[in-house]
Length: 542
Ligand SMILES: [Zn+2]
Image (cartoon, rainbow, N blue to C red; front, side, top):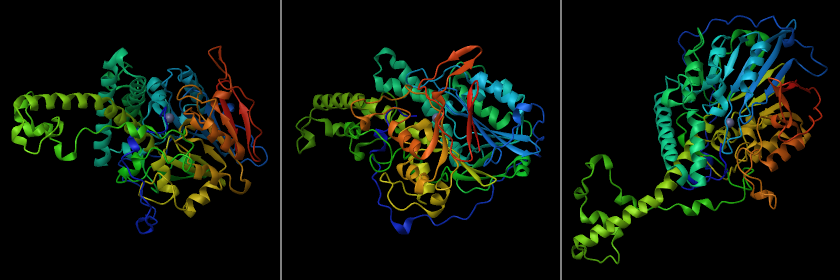
């Protein structure tokens, strides 16, 4: 999640023209990753609970997508009719995060989880975790004891969570370590922290989860959620997937006729794509019109002056030769020998001052890059059931999208080129789109939004979000807003779909009403679908 869609962290990557010769060849479908102890068929979905059964209306095939209103986060329950009115259930994410305004958590996720248990009768065929941000997994930690009591048939996670992928394993450990370190750094600034540093600290909380949650120790509640998903369900070893992997669907879902295709994340080797957070404004995404942030980055050293601190004994400045500070001597002369010891010492002081000034920028850049990297790990799944197609994209940002839209391994902020035929085929035939990244301006590239509405094609879009949690609108100039969800994006989607956002409905939690943040009646459905509002959710029947 980013308050500003335009991160300074992206400035160093030059927009590569996309040479045709280096385009990724169409990869054949890869075999499913080796899994030890693949789960036996989980028990069939509960036949208890008449609430899980319904009769499809004309044009519907028996899918229900329930979007819980949890605040700023995602929690979706998909139910499909498997025959004889019996439903099979799967969950996509279960999280919430308070965000930079600290208002994102509206206190409804426990009630939503309780409703899910009742609706499913405790039988969940599959849990999909798109990525390890708190706004997608906090519910698994907070309601861990409840989840442990479920009968779960399978868990899917992005390849980045795999214990059998050494590069990913090393990266995740490093990311966690960095997130905790940055969080500690920003927290230690206390009242002296700038607004940007405060924002960065909150980003890091999304990356680590809450501290002080039972069992979380110093590593945060995200670790608790990950532990539950990886090891908490008897007989279940998660499937770790990336683009084009063949999935192992739990038997009840297979029997019901569901199929799934993995579109993201890109392979682990495509690190450069993983860092690509946004595409260029006006061309690729619905970004704010600023672009000025890149100018502020200050680099104190030429690369030839960089030293390996590991080789420098702590506190021994003497191990630096006077030459080490050459760039910082005022009025440097051609002959180095004429510099006095005192001048060298002053030069060192100037260098240290410059370092101090550049440090906040470096830490902010690191925080934003880390955040983008985690979002780009999102597992992107296209489900198909009886001809209806549903796309769940997590919080995928530019690099994740580019890989499957443009068949490329090369990050390109201009998002140039022609969309691949497969991506075109997928996007022009969608029946349901889970709006990426809570409607943020750096998710859902313009090219994708435009393709979805090609030739008047109509679909359903659901956006789980909470207004006024991240970014700000600019009432004088909408092109300059950083608000989430992003106005121009939602306008575009609403023009081609029946768009519902979770914060447009009021909900009731334990007798307490939580008013809609952006009150609006449910939209007219597109043919073959209908909406129904509940106590805590909006249902979409397809
Ligand atoms: Zn999110």
